[in-house]
Length: 238
Image 1 (spheres, rainbow, N blue to C red):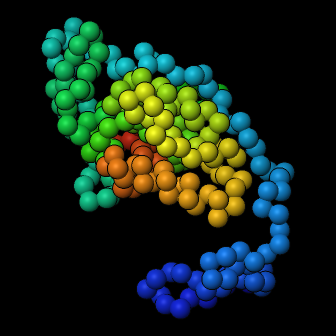
Image 2: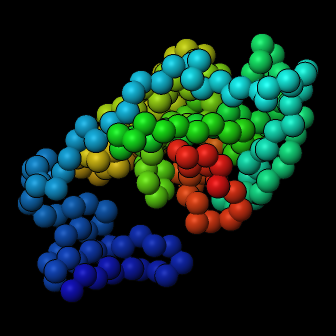
């Protein structure tokens, strides 16, 4: 049996964990002797199969004949930490034939890039996701786990996407790498033991919080088309 012993139901901090009837962890520490770095048959690395991104490819072209502004569908996030979204329409500035979000409070570009060899990528504008600046990209984004990126500058967006070609999370800003978390196994998992992985994950979350994003699932759920109301897949807005 798999059992957790809890001192309280209010705070889930087990004092002991049993797996298959054997003690596996006690007081927050693993007690089994299994080699955490042993390779398993199902572990696959280098599963991100797509071309490198360029800043030019991450610019959103305005409709033909657009003037100083273009009417644009925006994927707007609900407030209060919920992952729900709704559709808004905004008249956004156009410069040089492309949308320009500079000075547009709460708005960022978004890209979902197929990473399974199909070659597709779609772009959109998102509002109030939480990230205030920079570029954040992840290879684990439900359910297809395509590369999903939000960014305020296409150059940073391309840098973040290209950084996670081996799988993981990456935060870039101002042309520099701010934080990352490598997830080389299928682009979803790390081979590191929890004791090594936890501080690295915390460092990434702390960096995201400094830029305004307190819940990374808001990015992970952006391409999840089964939840309301509007999402972005590698094929377009759904």
